[in-house]
Image (cartoon, rainbow, N blue to C red):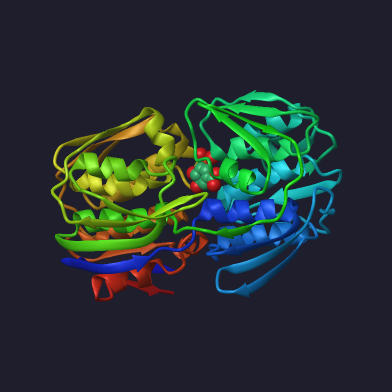
Length: 435
Ligand code: S3P
């Protein structure tokens, strides 16, 4: 499947983005472990989060779709899961593979996890090591560091204090979820604070979770079912925010977007680049949400590093598009994690955005982007990475001529209606989808 992208002069109107991917995964997993039913509205019905639903179903949990984005999970409590009859395929979803591993560490049976070609390349030692230290068995390929992996859990697990070298919400969440089955409180200490959706939702489900700076601790105890509403995904909104900043005549509003401060790095960076993101706070329940508005602006380069990086890690591909057309230089540091995402996003940006005329120099942990480029339509590829596909489409909106992006079926992992939503804002078929 490919996108054919035509340049546009104008973007206008209000759009809704689909439900938050991270929060949707967590709703399915915690709902499965809770006593009593959980009802979720706004669940992201994209491939990644449907993998998590299929996984909990394979573990014996009854899940019912009650309407669009509305799901009911009949939690069976801490002892409600059973051995799956087959290998569980996590598809492209790192969050499914890593968070589920934390749950499996506490299940006294064997579960086999695998994933697609991209996920089978991604590092799993970061979760296997702490889960093993807690007493779980994790065996598999490449010295038990890559999927397919087999898990056999025990109960109780040993409580640990885990100091992780990477700021990763997936690692933190895996240990916290395993902690539900531990013989005492578990803690995770991160080098910088990563997204805290697990902590917030665990509290909503009645767990005792305490956050002190970069340390999070959980005291084991039962979860009870909850009623949840998933906000729009700020990582999906990011594509329209950048498009709204760089298309010459644009005024875009995105409603009901999650603005959890551990996720809003891009909003601050766009402000620093000279585009104002106006926030109108909406509800402020467990996860804060807001309506976000942005208009065309003359952007300037920016420096991104340190604690800001985990707060916008998934937005760096589209930030690179903004940086390519901004005045001056942008530097991205401390972002080596980009090399182990759905693709090596540093190499992918230098290569693919480079084909369109962006001047990007790779660094081991980031990149330097010389702004002021005049982008030109080109034949490029997503490399099977959804965020690369959508970032390249945004670049195509401001390029001279047509851009053809190959290998875009992956967009369905997080944002199946991306092209439609963008075209509605453009008032024309800016992106056409070809088989
Ligand atoms: C996620 C955490 C991040 C992010 C991913 C979703 C999560 O990954 O890149 O898209 O839902 O916990 P890491 O934990 O590997 O940084």
